[in-house]
Length: 233
Image 1 (tube, rainbow, N blue to C red):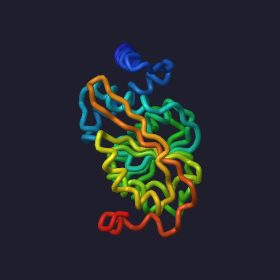
Image 2 (image 1 turned 45 degrees about the vertical axis):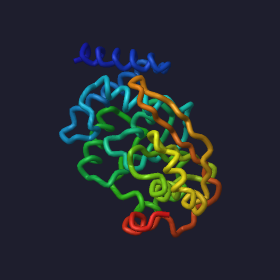
Image 3 (image 1 turned 45 degrees about the horizontal axis):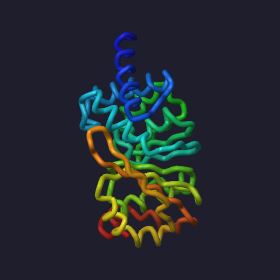
Image 4 (image 1 turned 90 degrees about the vertical axis):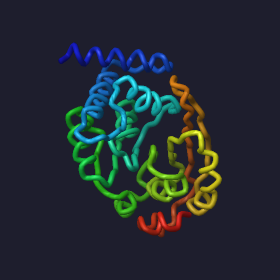
């Protein structure tokens, strides 16, 4: 088993080196074990069943645009744990992973425990129902493949501290989403601080949108799910 894990660790390290990313052996091993668990999960959590593809799309994609983070992190709509698990392995964070699926969060809780990630908590809930518990509690709020930007902002901004950062992974149509989200940005008092454009070795173009929260969020946000979906900001 150890020999098998070492082979997967070598694949992770080699692919990340091709992107100019260097991690220590412990982090490499945790990432390899996590990806194996994700691929072998009894439900389709990522849509990827090839290990090397998973390294590109679940690890390099997450780490390439991030210079470094430290503090409390909330991952909204985490699904199988991307990007939250990867960020919590690589950076010094206290991470909360939130998803509304009981099956996904049950699997994720077992996986986090098996990996020994004591800095990670898994919560099964709709994030908009957690405002009383976690309002303005996190230095970073992140999400990938959850919703369009104007919906995502309402779901995430209330949980971010003032002067905290929101990190959203997007594809090539991000400019259109930003245009549609201008009213949401104004109402929720956030500023698009930076867009980091990058490319996977497959040629897939990606962008990380970095928002800064400028002021406290009004207590009316987030609204309940039906209102958010029916009348986005």
